[in-house]
View 1 (cartoon, rainbow, N blue to C red):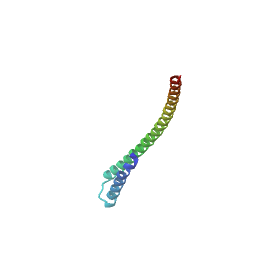
View 2 (view 1 turned 90 degrees about the vertical axis):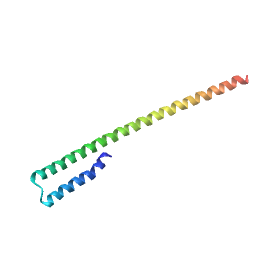
View 3 (view 1 turned 180 degrees about the horizontal axis):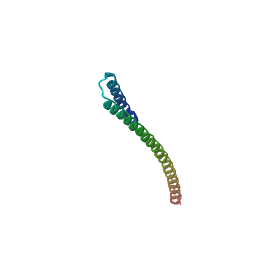
View 4 (view 1 turned 45 degrees about the vertical axis):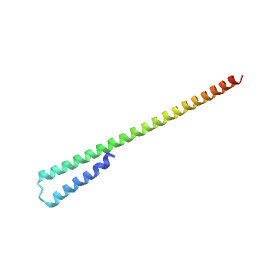
Length: 97
């Protein structure tokens, strides 16, 4: 899933921001930029998680449609097999006469 791939990026970004603060050598502008980057990363992660959830729902719906189509195809095949058997029996009866 996309959201799980962003977690290492977010952790790295947050740890880097923490190191900048602990080192005490970051200017206010750099700190604000790091916070802004972290906030944007969280937004991207949330968007990715939403997209992954939507994709999973679409996949579930597609699977349900595929199963319904398979059931229809199975029923059609059974009908065809039954009709073939009837024709075969009728042909055998005609050949016996």
